[in-house]
Length: 574
Image (cartoon, rainbow, N blue to C red; front, side, top):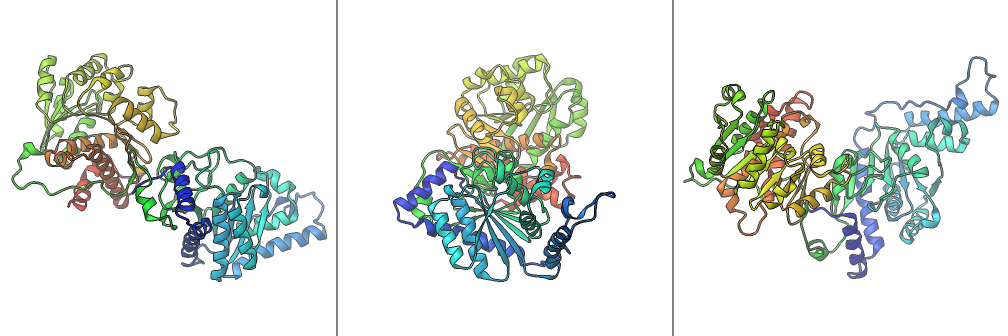
């Protein structure tokens, strides 16, 4: 599925309104309806599943020190009124919904959503305006007028404090009533910011975000992007909403699938809101940007008359003392992903250990002389260099010499990437395809960039363009970037895969797909070989998801990923 950046979405909306005559209020109404429908879906099933709602009242009202004077009649009245708000929820089955609206068009979506929920009936809805009313857009103001006409009200939310202890000590009683009612809601709608946010969330907006976080058992539905998340990068800008579901409009945004943004987005649902098809499919030229949740191309039927050489002769240079598992994991993963022949070159001192672990792969101790290693590697279709290889000076020299001399595709992983640090010119001089698979730490060592990498998508695309390679920047929402600027953001995988050895499995899978003749031939008509790499990343994540489902995220191992591959690959064969 194609992704769109914030700038692209703004241009898409502008053209729909100005060039195609689509009323902006119609787009807003359609967006609001999608959000309202999702809220309705969430609040309907088994509304009593959470049981009675408890509440901790303000210490200033009902909690008294031993020597403190007894509460006044007014304090007692206020405490009883707050208690009534909570207790009424325990006896009133009608859902309560709070809608937080900022001063932009995203806020207008929220105002319209509140009205639509009111019109559905069967729920108590309160809409809160957060921010400066002078910055309210005309469309949001029009939606407020419609809300008022329907019998609703857009209440001001003016709590400009985020220190809860200070807040409880200084807030007036009306504010306490408001926060108490919000704490009893069955669902909240986040319409504070849209996709244009680039600065940290502060002041009254941060207070509103914290209110939405204060009841983790009550779902939050975010409009387009969770407030506080950068739509292009997934970076959390100081504080961000934790959504149960994010209803995003027309196209998904990169920040919904990358970094912390992917964690904050919850389930992502994409809805069309009335952008003309001509714009959807013809507005933007240039490099592709896609979210990958199914294979870019899939796995075609294997030729009936093929032999093992047609499915790739792979050379893997890997392993060192203390790291004998990495080469075996990479080799096994390559074979499980369809490789025909896998030659596994390892240092002589670890060869006996590795040989015992291998059945289908063909391990051999690395020759002492470089020409013999080069000849063996050149006889293969693809080389994988790096898993568990170590960083001894002579090892790094071997890696650099092979990169300079080989004219076959090379997958560089782990210490193969580390060997390039300070020698990026060797990568630039290569004529054959090179695929690098760094995690952020390896990428930082290679490029000198700071950690964390805040804009992983741009960093990956820039590196791939500049150095003419395919870069797989691993992490939550792994980015596969091609030399032409195309990029694929992976949507599969889970935290159970964050264990040593998972990267070795991925490297072996990438190498195996690149080595298979019938897969390469499918891409000679102009398709990018980087698609194969993006598919490998997807299969790897899907195998992880299957393992998490069957074994749980705590117990799953990299070897389980390999064992899950037959089921995953069979499911995507065509």
